[in-house]
Structures are given as structure tokens and as C-alpha cells.
Amino acid sequence: MSRYLNGVTGITKSGIFLYTSYYGTDQSQVQRELSAASTADTKKSLLLNGFARFPLTILYVLLGMVMLAVYEYSPDLSSSVPYNKPDYLVPQFILLYLPQGLRAMIFASLLSAAMSSLDSALNSLSASTVHDFIAPRLKNKDRLLLISKLTTVGWGILITGFAFVVGDISGTVIESINKIGSAFYGPILAAFVVGVLSRQATARSVTAGILSGVGFNLLLWLTMPGVYWMWWSLSGFLIAAGVSFFVALTDRSPRSADISRYVLRGTDLLKEERRWLPAYAILILYFLLILTILLLI
Image 1 (tube, one colour):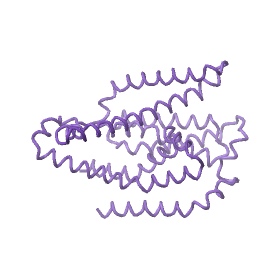
Image 2 (image 1 turned 30 degrees about the horizontal axis):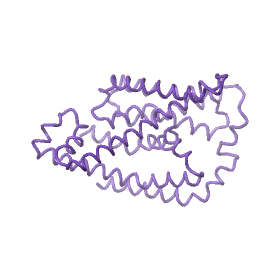
Image 3 (image 1 turned 180 degrees about the horizontal axis):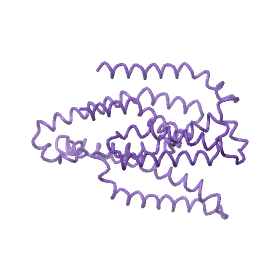
Image 4 (image 1 turned 135 degrees about the horizontal axis):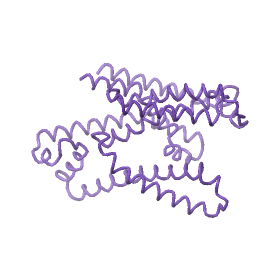
């Protein structure tokens, strides 16, 4: 029971950092946002996501409760789902209880959703690798497209191999994904926060912060298994932000003049956000309403 309460506390507090980083700084999400026609359209999509996320999560929970009820009272389903493999529950339910035509459509939808997530991740990894590490050192730019494709294939092979050795990270796929993400999302969010708050931030200071935050989270993972993984986003954020600010104050390397355009203080960024403030306020009230409902429950 104490572990359950610890998990709920971690989700309601540290989960803010996890999902803020995921929807605000994750490369796979940013690519989707950059495909919008304008910045206003991007903001609208994020606001819609903010309002729709909780109802969708409730549907996930209700689906899980229904599946568990069927599992408890159906010998066929309970015998086909290993006790330590809860990810088998939904596929086995589909195979046992749904008609063939609907079964095929649902499995096709599941595969399409999985492929959509995978191609976003592969494209993000390839784009970041090529843009940050390969393109600046590449003399013949005509081969950039070919190299991008080969980089995507290379990341695909690496991820496939990685999948064979991480099966014991957690009992379910969704928890494994978020567990790995929690080790990195907090430090990544800290890099963006430091970048928009401090004119002293440099690439060196931000890199030092990210490495420190991720290293601290990995240390927690290996040495303190009692710390619930949702707290890693918070711990990584605090460590990364602290180290970034400290290194920025002591770093004497030259600053880029372009950085000043993206700092909140002394720019027009806050003025441009004024017309969106009512929407942000409604979203915050919506969030507080959700917290109130959870506390009452």
C-alpha cells in the first residue's frame, strides 16, 4: 500500500516535469509541432492535448478495469495470460472474444499506432544525429540524404538490439518506456528552462547540466531501487538546472548574440504570449480541478 501511495504522489508531483518535458522538448513531439502551419496552430494543438489527455487516461483506466474483471471471471482468458505478463491481457481478450473482422481491424490499428510511434522516434534520432554531429563535418552535402537514411537504419538496428536486453526493466511495456524516459526528460527540460531564463547559459553549461542530471538519475536507478521512478524527472531537473547555472556563472567562453532573442527577460516573448494568457489560465484551473477530484477520490 505504501508503494502505491508513493507512486500516486510521484505521478501527481514529479509527473508534471515528465510530461512538460515530453510535450515541450521531446524531439518526436517537436517535429509534430513544427509541421503546423503557424505558431498559433501549434499552441492550439498543445492546448487541445492538455484538455483531452485526462479524459483519454480515464478511458485507459476504465478499459483496464473491464479487462481485469473479465480476467478474474474467465478461465479461458486467465489461463492464456501469464501472471507476470500483463501486456498479454488485451491481445488475448481480442483473440478470444471479438469477431474476426473486428479483430483484424483492431490489430491493424494497434500495429499502425506502434509504427507511428517508432518512426517518430527513429526520425528524431536520425535528424538529431545528422544535424548535430554529421552535417557540420560533411563536405559533400549532396550525400546528406543518403547518410540520413543510413543513420536511420543504424539507429533501427541499435534499438532492435537494445530491445532484447531491456526486457526486465519493468513488468509492463508502458512502465518501461516511461521509466527510461524519466531518466532523461528532467535534465532535458532543465536545459530549455535554463536557456530561456539565463543570458549566461552556454552550450558547455547546458551539456554539463544534462550529463550531471542523467548521471544522478542512473545512480538512483542502480543504487536506490526504493525511490519510485517518477521522481527521477524531478531529481534530474533539479540537478541539471543547478549544475547548468553554476557552470554558466563560472564559464568565460564567448556567448552567441542570437541567444538573447530567446531569453524571456528583455525580449518581446512575454508580450507575444499575452493573448494566450486566458487559455493558459483555463488550462491551469482545469489541472487544479483534476487534482481536487483525485484528492477527493
